[in-house]
Image (cartoon, rainbow, N blue to C red; front, side, top):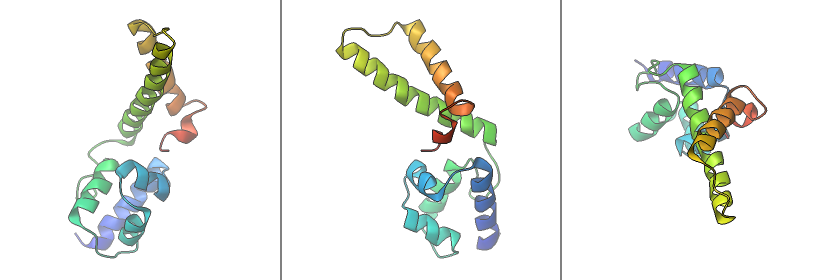
Length: 125
């Protein structure tokens, strides 16, 4: 595979996932300049390509290994866990910690908000 084919596959996937280069940089823990260099066809480290493709659910050749819906669900679960953890931490400080069942319900509801609700715009932020 030539470099340009991989770049095109990654660009296509980025567009399908609907993620900005800034958000992709944050989620993949890569710099925006590094990603810009990759998309412009410049040399980047193999570890950069690996992080980038893995973040987008692709293998090193740019082939799908995780479908987009699963990728979004995983991201929504992670974001929901972050949000609910903050709520739980704050509630615990106030000695009003949530019960385990309430936490599960809150995680489920928050995940859905990231997938289809009002938080959808923040899925990749």
